[in-house]
Amino acid sequence: MKNSIDYKKIRRASVLLAQSTDVQKNLFLKSLGEKIVRNQKKILAANARDIKSAEAKGLERAFIQRLVLDEKGLRHLAVKVQSVQKLKSGLGETIEKTERDGLILKKVRVPLGVLAVIYEARPEVTTDVASLCVKSGNAAILKGGSEALATNTALYACIRAALKKSGLPEDAVTFITTGDRAVTNEMLTRHDGIDLVIARGGYAMVKGVMERTKIPVLAHSAGGARVYVDKSADLAIAERTLVNAKINKPSACDSLDTILVHRAIAKKFIPLITKAMEAEGVTVRRQMDWDEETLSLKVGIKVVKDADEAIAFIEKHSKKHTEGIVAKDAKVVKRFLNVIDAAALFVNASIQLHDGYVFGLGAEMGISTSKLHARGPVGLKELTTYKWEVYGHGNIRQ
Image (cartoon, rainbow, N blue to C red; front, side, top):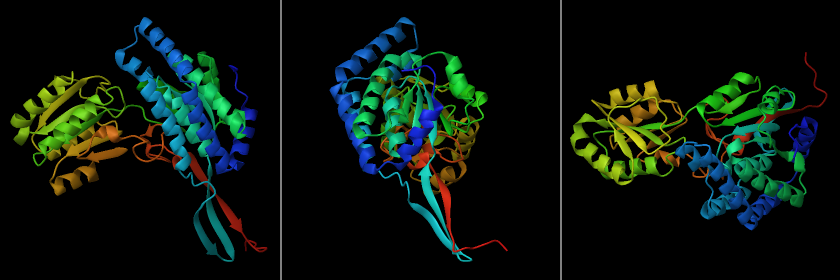
């Protein structure tokens, strides 16, 4: 694998991939899932090396958690890849069709082209990205974090083998193995070779990517979430969903950071939720930096006088990623949904359900907080655009 990038080969691969059949793409997905399972020992051994190295460097526990792949996680990864076979990318479909002045105009769904995906830690992103890009007809250039290099390299070997077996161009997915930032920085200048950059990671990394490129970027710069528990809430639902929102994946971008409690139920609910959280090893704080994305087993609780104060607090501190409410009062729920601006809003459900696999997208390229092109989990159709096809019979402009 080379440290330099051959953009001409990748562009040719994207053209060939766009013309490939769903049969070929699904064969790739089936083969990739099989190869992940077949190479389980190699992948887990590589992952163990990455974790050992990360621990030796003294990296934060939350960061190391994102690196971990076990047998169960690897099987789930293979299932996710193969589940994309059942999904429709919509490529070639006519989104709109009109007739005007003797012309037939069609808006047709097509791939974006060549995507550069820069991500940190989570090795499952490597196969998620490959499966979604290939199924949506896009070539991909992958740049994972150096901390997961051994795991990503093992997974990429499976991807190359699956591309070859399915008869798809092997250059359809390229993996950058070097940690040399000059290679990444040069890639971010290649608007002639890359159509879209997708950045997944911490705020500093995403901000750095956006500052160094003129290529369109799809990203979320920060995550974390707040959940308001209204006086009308079912407290059993509140307890169950809030605990899950904190402990299911505490290092995830949709993890719970702050619980807002209506003062009318504060005396009853705060001791209840504090006990439940602490039983799961969560540190509960009544004072903290309300803008902090905790990414750990830590959560803040704040009492508010009413729904309006809760909404104002969320508007002030939201990263526009994920927010939630627990309430039975339909008017309060409607006001919350109408006012709060975020990629996804959850009502009486755990915010950790903000996930492409849960949403039926098979997997996701990440969760976008952008308002243009795609918002929320980025799946197959979010990786497409359209072009106009215009049919006439010698028509001319008067």
